[in-house]
Length: 85
Image (cartoon, rainbow, N blue to C red):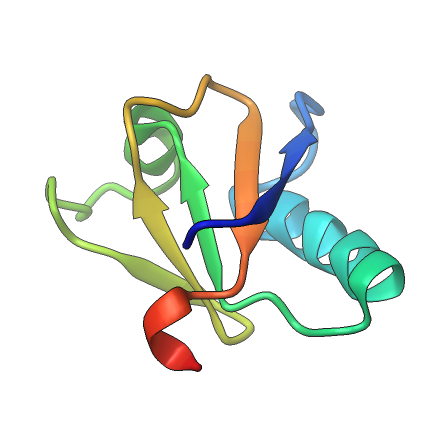
């Protein structure tokens, strides 16, 4: 992904998938297309999945979730996967 939207959500009452859904809803309304990829800080994946291993990716509602140390905690880099087009 070369271009995306940075989203911040630190609501402790919402699960990771809910935060990504909120970001995806805003992305769709702003850009008119569905996001397919979201990068989050590795600690966010570890906190939300007991069986997640480093290097694994998850999916929620058609959006692939990958860990990246370059994304700060509670931030979401969401957009369209360049290899999917």
